[in-house]
Image (cartoon, rainbow, N blue to C red):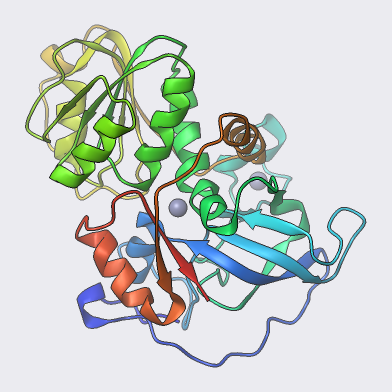
Length: 325
Ligand SMILES: [Zn+2]
Ligand SMILES: [Zn+2]
């Protein structure tokens, strides 16, 4: 549970809470693993407006159905839960194939309790089947870092064999690069942290540089992962005419002024990536299974959730962090 504050003040505390009472249309899950996401940091530190007291964060849940079995989800079924925990199904966006932009969404681990817990409640139509070839720890980071990273590729319009820049190389980027390699793309990674650069090289990046270096060729697509407007401007400077930049961040520190004539003119585009649809989830999980995507994972016990978030904040995690209750 949290009281929004900087992670240095250990805002998460362990508490005994009632098992969530079952409500219609939901399944009760025993949590087997829960991935950490930068969005958890924004929730815990209050950069995203706090919505509830005593919230349990966490939105990359691998769980086992223990109550409210349906024909779809029998007892013992292993499923995944992501950031979008539900939509109204009736607003203009939901009825036009854009449920990621729903006017009344539910966010796992933000508007409802999430997976830094032993049990979690999830809408039965917003849980996803997981291939048996993925173990719990491998599956957890796929559920937001992977799915929304994959959506970023769609938003940026990535086609096979293109030149794609990844700016920042955390949990999401280290999964995205596997999909790009499967599509035969050349991947240019610009990131701070020698360990992140080494990981990018080992995963097949064509070029790797620091956050101050620019890729040596103009890029067709760029995706930024760091919550920094300066990174967005740096990425924009690397795009060819007509190229698209997708911002994979729910929060940016600020958006600095930039030179329109040099950086945006030429039909370059900047697009934000907002949430995900269930189609994104199903499509990405199928690809991840097919290409045998295996995240690099650092495991923390639930009691060490503050330490895990602090490690994420200081870029000390290479790959993805996962909490196990
Ligand atoms: Zn809606
Ligand atoms: Zn997330």
